[in-house]
Image (cartoon, rainbow, N blue to C red):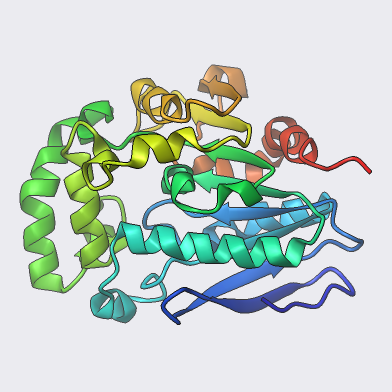
Length: 290
């Protein structure tokens, strides 16, 4: 992965995955030598541009920030042609992490995983990660869902999703106002997980051991007004990281001056003060001392 470090800049680049596919990346550089590097790992159906404001904030605070898109997320046409599943996306995240860590040199790397980005850590080389921040990341089993989505989830995965993908050639979540647009293989595997009490363990019988191997300290941020995942979801996922020191922080709108965050809202630029208060101390703490 190549970029110019002479001045603060935003550079488009790419990383080559293990199967030769080029994965698009964007690097946000600070003015001076970075204090550390933060890899922003996206949620399901969330393009990398969604995290641009947060990445610029990190650069303003002295960190190199890197965003990327999972394969197939470039356009509707790309989704229709894509054959990847969630496991393939996890392998893509592994490739991006390897490239970011190679370029980081002696700088510490923080993995900031939003939702899905907090689930796939056991499937990457997490020995290269100094610290982890998860945002709204939980176990996606449908009984951990909240509100209306909990009761319609089985219908989504057993009925709506198979029909919609067959007709459209991808999952048209934006048009259906359900989750977001996704390649067929991704939504099919994810649906299998969401219907199973063991979630992703369904397809990975060795995953309990993989989660136990994660040793980087974790700070979890979650919100009581999350319209998708309840408290049991957040707790279940993080309980799988049995050997990582953890700080779990859960906030209600009342604790945030009445502001709502939901599943995606924490990354709105209007929440920069929350980023300074809740994220910056943790990310800065990953800086190695000379």
